[in-house]
Length: 364
Image (cartoon, rainbow, N blue to C red; front, side):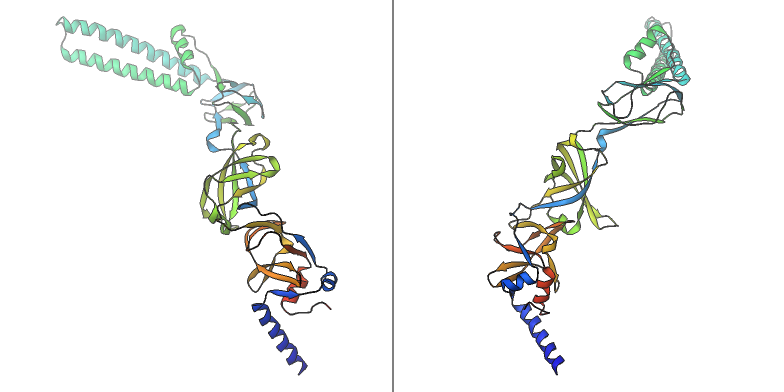
């Protein structure tokens, strides 16, 4: 009979909890239960804080410098971490293939000159009525083919790293050289160096990675539930490194492992404080309408009857208040709730308050 009465009492108290949100507790009971309160932190603008992110280099700012021809490394002039300017020589190579390509250009240049002279002669002969028009057309065709062959050889040398001035100098002086200079395509920093003096290389072997390190990009993992309020152009801040930028893209697909969405940002302010590959925590401003948000300790949040609650201090004890968790971090979470902002919330002894709310135990 006693067990039946206890069960009826528990059912009554649970029913009472479902309809009433106040928990009557005296100050003595609060102290005995070890319940501590703290002021609700200041209201903040809509934001997602503590989002895990990695610093990366924007793809249009990263270049791989390779050897265009089979060669041997004669000398490297820069190392990892060195700053370089556009056009600066990074390494010199010895390439017999370069000398062969130069010889091909000189041959094509000679043929083009000969074809030009033949055309001038035949044009005059045709005007004088000495040759037929068909011969003139054949000579014109030969001249066009010779020019095309010379253009092809020039383009091959440009791809090998020779400048227009160097090619013009070669045509005028006929001096072949097997020295191949590898230059930087941009002004930036050397991130990787894979070549060393004396090394023999095949064509298209990577030698250096050069990158421009300002601005930098940020790849941020955002929970699906928090991504709905993100908009391109939103402010992104990395508080620990005094860096700031803008959101540039919001992913459309979920990662398979942790069910998060990848969003990207471009960091312009304070990019010099960051390093590519670095892991940081970012804060993203959101467009959450008029709902107020607070960043509170995780210890203040309770989950009961499929509801997320905090316990608000009132004169008679505590009041449960339903909240919505917008983002959950390791130590704190951002919530949205119908609060004034001057409340005191329970941050310790939450299990005792949950038990009291469910009608289990209670303070004497």
